[in-house]
Length: 139
Image (cartoon, rainbow, N blue to C red):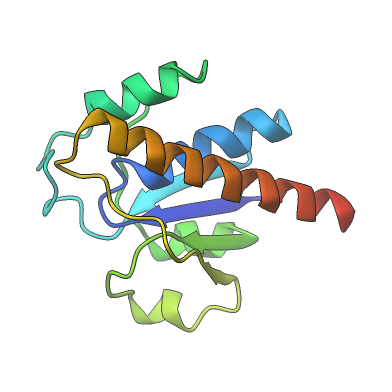
């Protein structure tokens, strides 16, 4: 199943979810994107923030080579499921999509200490593991 994970700036939560999904499934079926890259702490810098790289490295997952991508309609069309991890306003083509799933209660870790990034990482990990387990049960 191709899964697209979306957060506000594609700098934290969606990057973590993509890495976990691909690791748990042994695939490269997940991708991630953001709704508003320019309005992030990284600005026009396409790299993943160092704290995100660090907390994922602690889990044995490398995201330092990842680049932040702006959401496009083509990305939504190519996915089987679209998981939104933000309360940011969605474009019409996404908000009306039957592929849309919202994950509530995962805070944005931007401008927070590394320990908060670890907490967010752990929440994302749990949610992704549950998603993978549910998919496996339905195969």
